[in-house]
Amino acid sequence: MPKRKRRRDVTTTPTAEAQPTSAPVDPAVALFAQRHQEDLDRQKAEQRAAAERRKREAEHQRLIAEKDGAVAKVKELRRRDRVPPGAAAEADAAYKAALAALIEFETGAPPPWAATDAPPPEPDPEPDVP
Image (tube, rainbow, N blue to C red):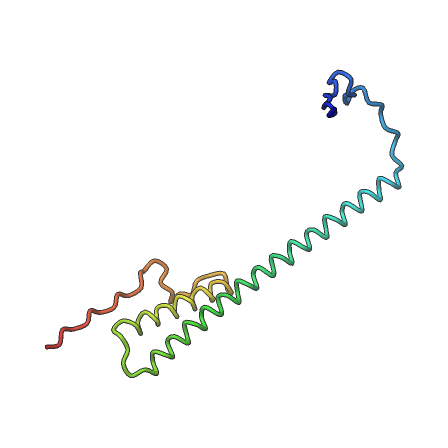
């Protein structure tokens, strides 16, 4: 026959008031516990700081890679003889935006030449050649 689940009687469990008071804590043990907790807190703070440094370094590397990709695109377009209309302007705008983001990340302020709210320039429509 399967065993039945028995509920514990709520009235028989000891409450906080009914539990005996604990013995006084030795001051040396209390000091050890306090210093141990402070050491754990210091280690956690160091780990958080290291994680933040790694995060900032990863973001910096991402911005550098983005800028380098934009530079490569601009150089590639400049080497071509035939460039689609507006492609050079788009590549140049992408490079300037990537460079501005990198400078802002490194210095904390956007460069004065960076347009903050201006949209990128629209490419000129291709003229109709009869």
